[in-house]
Image 1 (cartoon, one colour):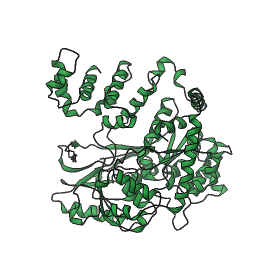
Image 2 (tube, rainbow, N blue to C red):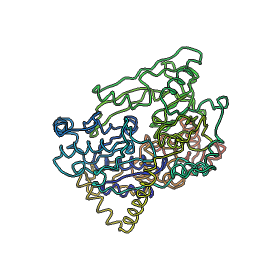
Image 3 (tube, rainbow, N blue to C red):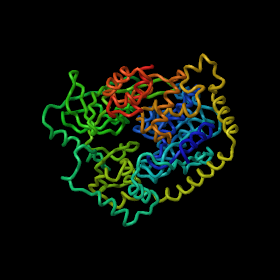
Image 4 (cartoon, rainbow, N blue to C red):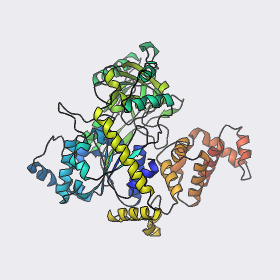
Length: 554
């Protein structure tokens, strides 16, 4: 199933299980769905199974959202006590759509406890009290923490069955484009690792003196990570510069943000330190996982990071926020950096990396090796220090269950393919109106101007959404399946419609080239771009020239 097909189904208000291989675009699809809901006046409740995943999506853990906290079981009295808490009851009563990320890491018991609280608060004996529920994740990745008990996945719960979920299994691949590497990952995922796959990985095994300088190391245990980061920083000359995290909001909410944040509370850096960005830049200068080196400190003391591509970035603090019903309940502020010498496989889940040094000699959990390897875009970026048998294993139960998920997704795809566009549109309208939102065609003109995608043709709305997510021009073009020239044409049309501002697309053009292109455009009296292109001696593409011209008109 494509992202577009899954998004169409999500917009009907059905309960959905969105899954797919790492890099298939699950997060992007959910972001597009969330943006559509918000544009229609519906604020979704976004949660995750773990603190790290919650930080990535700007939400809270399901444990916090539902009020169950660290409880491992609930009595009837516990359910009544939690449901009686005013802030919990208000939160759940106001909710329309509940999105749960990293569902693979949520135990069935936790899933059921959250369901029980929702039923009690909403006084409706339906799954999650009648909320629309969207579950996101890949069961081949890290499973729930069992704490000495047998692992029970969320799909084993009767609540999962009662939700009557439509499965949307994304089959496109956006992270890896290396055929040999994809073959290895597919073999691990299908439980069919053969000698040829094992040998392919062992060819990437390196000795300690062959390691690339800037690539992060992934380990299965925290002790290895802390030791290596401290050792490598201590080797560098010069004094340590310390950067402390600041926070706002209730202590309990702030603590959750801190636990999930990849940047530490006290970040220690030196010139020459290898670092990794831990957040996406709104201007597109870096993404979560971009590697670099601290090359100095600015006059205000903030670090200057040089990326592998030679781009120098003056780094400023950024915020991680916990939102509820569109309001910020807590926030932390820190430089979006962490030392990149080492991190755990667990903390790497959800990230994309150009290169990684991976030690799987102590892998102890199903899916650990699969998660670590699938973070990297190409096999040439994998540097193996060690590999054990467990690293290439996925949970045997998931191998069988995955066949059911794929079959269910195909059936859903066929069902919706047989429906006419008008039938699907009617379902989507009913969904928004049932949630108390406003369908675009029904929004008064004065109000629609404040809604980003109101009245836009689908092709333009999708391009605008992709651009606003901070992707590069090639990234937007790849995602949309269009050429870069067509994307720029869409932006020009959006500008003519008054639906585009400079802040939407400024990140598509490197700051360093804007003045040069601007001067060349100003010197040309005609509207033709060929003379400008030649005047710049072909240093900048026609698309870049058109984007700078678009900036001039804003």
